[in-house]
Amino acid sequence: QVQLVESGGGLVQPGGFLSLSCAVSGSIASLEFMAWYRQAPGKQRELVATATDNDHTNYADSVKGRFTASSSNAENSAYLHMSSLKPEDTAVYYCNLQGKLDSYTRFDSWGQGSQVTVSS
Image 1 (cartoon, rainbow, N blue to C red):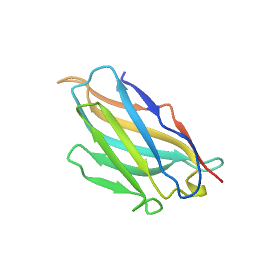
Image 2: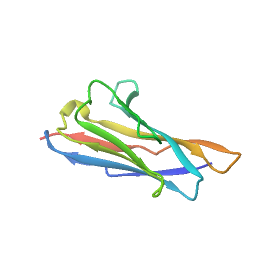
Image 3: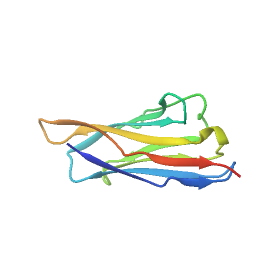
Image 4: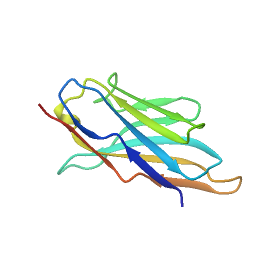
């Protein structure tokens, strides 16, 4: 199974900027689909953004215009750039990457989660 390593979470003031990274540990053939989810305390996990390998992206209405999802096949990584952060963005953020491990094997892996706290 492909392991993912998330990084970049932390504490930021309202209106601030934060970037999350999700890196594949090991080698893969290709990265085809990326999704970012978040889960706030006491709430269900929600889909925040998705991106495909042909740069087609979709965002939840709550983050549209503020968050940008991207990926890099060369770096085997995915990113979520978050700006104009609000206290309601506070949550644990999870990445989900899908692609090909080799010509015959696909993978669908999750990151360990990154805490993002927006507070003054």
